[in-house]
Length: 447
Image (cartoon, rainbow, N blue to C red):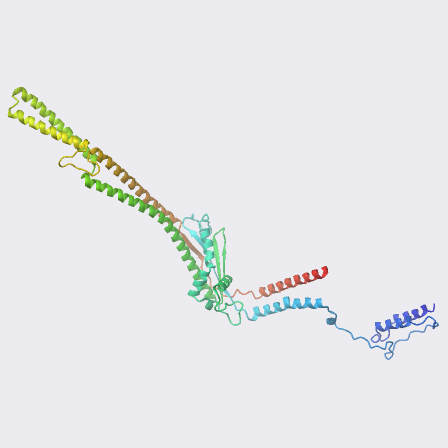
């Protein structure tokens, strides 16, 4: 009871607030309670006295009170790191990008154009749109991909640099160092910058390509776009001409081979005719056969006359001797003609080709040369027909660049996106900052 009474009195004293709450502090009440609990047990209980309001002059603790700390003093190191990361990843980039887009970034204008690689062999369409959207069965698909790669290639960058000067077209405008091209850049960096300023979209279904060229003036963007289309058209024409010449070259080679063969056979036929002195040995054989038949007919008549004359006169009469002389001459001539026709022997005035002297040999040689000549003529005729067909097909498969939207001239700047870019920078910073914070707390929870 002696110990509980002081505790009760102290509890009452602690529970009652001071009339001037600005002076009494919780730490003072706590120290007062501790001092009361440390009193010896032999001390008699004192009557409970009403608690008087504490005056500003009375202090129960000889130590001075602790000063009140601000909210920055309560922050821990990790909190400071999170706040610093937010400022570095979100706040500063957002402010910098917003200021750059608003006051530094130069206006950019784009020129738009649409075209397509077409083939003459494609089926015609009734409407104007179908002329450019119809498919040519994939015959121009590869050429379209080649054209896209050509527009975004180093060769195109070099041609634009030679025609306009890449540094002059995309030079930095004022303090805009981000969107302008730096002088004396290597070709790889120029190509990367070119691909950022030029966009080519290709639709496989319709075969249409959309070209967009950006520059710092509308006139320059239109000029560069027109130059790109002109070079693309030249490339397609060169590819078409190369393919056409390749197809025709094979056909021309076949024609040349057939022509050489025909020339050789005709030369052989002419040599034969010069050596044999006859245009056609078959016709000569016919004439020789007719001559032999005529001689035999005359010989038969003379022999008949001789028989008739011997019945009427003696054998030594002049008429009989003349008839016998004529028969002897006809027999000799007949024998000579027969020998030239089939034996290969030739008398005075005989004809020889150097390979065969008889009519049968000459006919066989002539027929062989004539067969080769006819075959060469037919092959030459077929090769000419193939060449003409190849020429028609090559003309039908010829490619061309159909431009149905010429490069436009902008009247208002479309780039850069002055509102969208800062928003994207802010969102990207928030994403990085959030990921970093999540990783930090994940590692902290594990340890």
